Length: 154
Length: 154
DNA sequence: CAAATTCCGATTGGTTTAGTAGGATATAAA
DNA sequence: TTTATATCCTACTAAACCAATCGGAATTTG
Image (cartoon, rainbow over all chains, first blue to last red; front, side, top):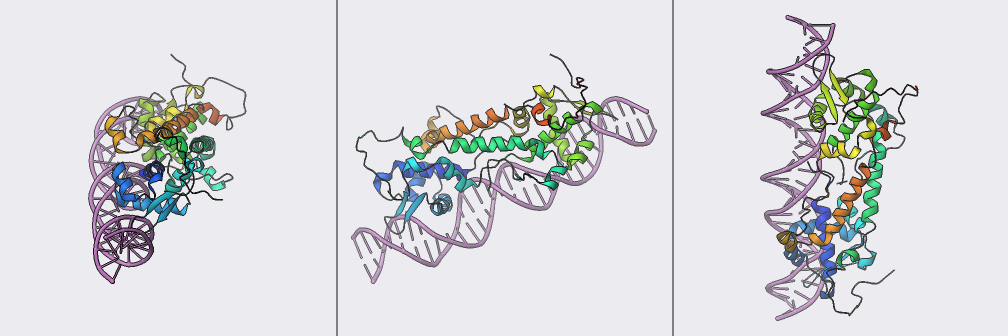
């Protein structure tokens, strides 16, 4: 039991993003170093990061001395985007069929639908109200440099 | 994928509660009839309802012509209670360790903890703001009888 | 007693999760 | 050019969990 929980995909993915943000000044960050710092399996992270890359959240630099960097400034990265990319759409039940003739004759789904919709909206609302910058602001190095370490583009 | 979802336990359990509320005037409602109306496996529902009973949400009447009735008025039954009883505590990640020395050295859990806490609170807030009465008000028989069909007690 | 029903525990098939394994491709540095 | 370091990609696997099934004991009504 203990349901309504995020899997390791979403959680580890968020750890990766936070780690990349925290080590942005070091240039490309290898997954190996992320895995060591976060005490996670590198191979498993390797399985998650393609989704982050395809979603345009990180960029990869291949080859020796390569690694990953954030594709956007932490201020512009919503936690909700990270989680949805790795966990799939946030929907507490599968059928969000509105008219759904078959569906609704069979069970009391329609009566309870209001619950699932409200839960879904509420979760999305929370994770879309927090950016990566919000999470790393406490761990930021105190030096007042304020160099822009992240890619700037359209 | 498609995570952050309720399992059938919480959903079917809520169907049961709604069905009991809708058929309260018929006296004890057998699980067989619930299962038939909702097109669900009676045996599977049989596995869920002990949790509802132990939690004081329904009462059982054994023997022939027996069945289940709501233990409280629908107005006094929070959807959150039904769901937590069947799904376990609503916590999107397991470790809610606050001080947690070990935990926090290993991963960026503490940095991301804020996210999980806010999601948890938000879900609980939603499901605790809806009562069973809110769900059945649309399907209520239009007759203006307004007899109190549910057990009244301390 | 017979029928209807709750009650209880064990088992099972299937899916998902989390992680492993092995290697192909690309790049920097020696 | 060789070597080491990376990303990249596909498959496989062990364990856990979910949803459901099965069989039967206990209780109550008629």
